[in-house]
Image (cartoon, rainbow over all chains, first blue to last red):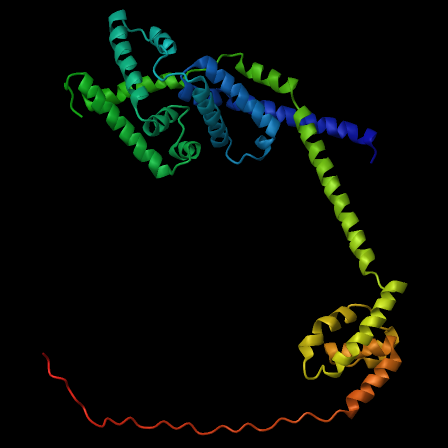
Length: 188
Length: 185
């Protein structure tokens, strides 16, 4: 078969490949962004990481052999986000949770209630930021599109049982710290 | 505050980790991918193709060189073979006594193709030993030396081995003449 005869077939294959990749982008952009955001806590940085993730995936060609799409992408985005975090040295807990207050705005609560709840949620954010990495990471990943223990385990490179234990410990530690901050008026 | 309140507070805080990306993000990513698509791939594949071709060519050259070195039938090789056969002749005479000594030489000679007619004539149901193959090879290329060698081997006296005589082993019984104990001081 000559090169001229092959040309349309090659073009058709390239087109097919491009469409498949674009479908993947449509399917998983939101998820990849959230994984990156869970690490970076900054929308603009997370968007850049999401872009980088898909570009690297496309260049490397690994996307065609992914067995578990979500786990693969989450792992990749998480690592890129971690690299970015290390390189930019963005301190944890320095960012104001603007998005959070935006979500509270439409809840129908009166301003006082919103302020009280907002303060409490802000406090929880700070406490989450203070958690050791091994506890904070599975906790924030568990909040991303309902990632299950198996997926989190794959991203973090630990056993599934370890993820469950760390999730429990993270919540327990948060509750204890919250109890301390609220003057012990609680029943754990 | 109760444990459930804390749980709901934590859950509420965690919802902020599920923020939505900007709507233009997908389009942005797709545009990026389209602007720098297959170029990298093509470069990479061209690089690998070049490397693969180079290795294949080098392998082919190596195989050809080795093949040329080992090809039989050329004049210098035949001269070498003759000298080898002559030098091997005395060792063949003692081959029954020390077969392993000539083994490597025999292998190197039998590696070359022997005369088809002689092989056919000498063929039997059982495989030839290395020594037999060597003799066939020698007879094919140098019949005079082979004849001489066979006559020399035929004149040799048969090898006789003296029977071994082993003396019976005897151990003398141990006897204690007297036991003396020194007093302690």
